[in-house]
Length: 485
Ligand SMILES: *Cc1c(COP(=O)(O)O)cnc(C)c1O
Image (cartoon, rainbow, N blue to C red; front, side):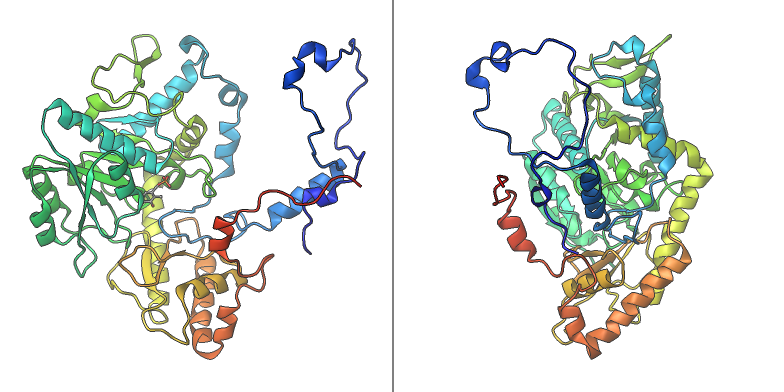
């Protein structure tokens, strides 16, 4: 069943298209384009019939694991089902065919939508104003750090440090460092939350912000958040929330209620856009009043008679993205929020939390659960707490593929040895959760009795165990053969 390369399917003279006969005068290319710019030899593209082409790409697409084919409990990534109606609406011609260079009076509908999404995100988070421009979560982090930097430069305060817990997502220190801040790590306590003593020790007048993920990457709500907020604010610095895990908080609590000054959202996670594989995202930033003047330009405003872009914001950090952000993702978020409504969104979080706790309970007798307490929307097990037959977490993940499940996130967060980070999301049925739990429990037995099955996994997939380091370091993107017969 090896799928040949499209270059191997190539047969000279085959075509996947048919065009009508040319009814205009033919001109020599040389007369239209200066000869020096013309290619000297053919493009070397493969030739195939339409049917061969369709079959080739359809077969390739079926080798993939996706949310539409398999359970996908990739922790921290919120791989929920994305309702197809969102796609249909985002592709309506009134949305899909507008151009960012059109004059504002011809795109009032889309401006209204952007304006309303901002208001909805303000309502959900308690922030005072939102910018939809950042293209992903990490970009939202960077935008926020740039705003905080601009704020202190404006106030002529020298603050060069950002505090980040050791459980944080790697993008947090990366964004802060990229923005020119010194990153200082704050330790976690044995309950998985921020170690308050360590925080107090490191919290001084040099600190610009503490970046917190709530719930954190262990799937735990920060119980001391009100204390933490007080400690940070007493020193005159900002409390930033990495909002990638907002799926656990919708309609339950607003980040502003526990002292968040600025945050990012991951529309592609919480508000349902297919993502992964580098696909388009959207990482809006929401800020409380003090930081609002620093939001990127343009902002979308509502005037007496129309909606318009406001570029006249002297303290703004400027533009962070071409045009106005990944608008298609924003449209899908709008559909998602409007179709679920207030009660629906609350149910999303309740069910996400319920599903995670159910799975955690079913699995904790088979795998070590380092932080044993009720979780939010995800939880973290260890696959390597005690070495059984030299099995690694990676082997468990690979074996899951044989059972038809996408593996959870592995080896993250770093504070759990051999972490298996499981996020089922609210869209999965009890049957699916049970099937997944049964597979993992079965694999736990195999670890002891048939370790070779794990070491040699996967066996049921289109490719077996790959050397991922070699694949990344020795990319082979060029076909080595020749098209000539
Ligand atoms: C996904 C994620 C990010 C980064 O978001 P991207 O949209 O992938 O850039 C940051 N923090 C956490 C906790 C995340 O899960």
